[in-house]
Length: 289
Image (tube, rainbow, N blue to C red):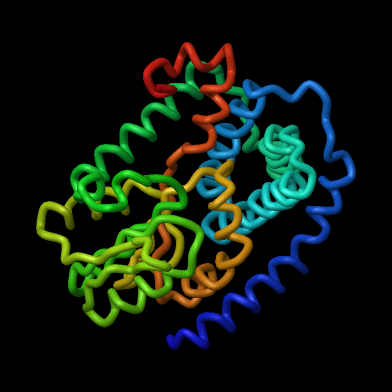
């Protein structure tokens, strides 16, 4: 795919997504100020949104999961825009709750009430998992190791083992897909900043990637050579930005069978809420350091 075609696809994706989600946004923008929303509630609903994504995947399949992600990220995006225009930090606490309300109304059987300790254990386990993967794949020793965050993409070509690591809400994941298809491993930079890099995975690293794939939420063609793994957090602002601007372009690749999309959890922003909560922070302990 040429850069021109990618840009056209991304423009269409933004327009289609905006039209499709008008109803969702109107519903939540009306009561956008809710009293007594605390970091504790934002943490609880934020992690609850992840459990909702997993539940929808297990009960209704991949397409429903993609639709849910589109909806909850669009809700987050509207609150983030409101915050940028007003500098009112209340918006940053409100959107996890608004997302969870949407989830509970759309899929009531996927709205769970877990204990805080269980939610904390889930967050700590997910962060440990990402740290282990980043170590085994050498990401922590790369220039990206100091800026590890979400969205974090791993693009893997099963045919030649070319692997790319891309961080951030940019279209470079599509460049990584094209380079991996061509068998090229290079560095992806923007204005002098490295946003991604490619390498040929060795047998040990291929085993790690296979484990990530088998343990994730797998959507699309299981036999596709190109696998796009996204480590995300439903509360991550950059993830919301990526989904709104580029998500439909990636979704189209998943739907047409050219890409297997794998979702893993990396609760970067839920952790921020938890560490801001006098109730949750002591449970997280060193994870707030």
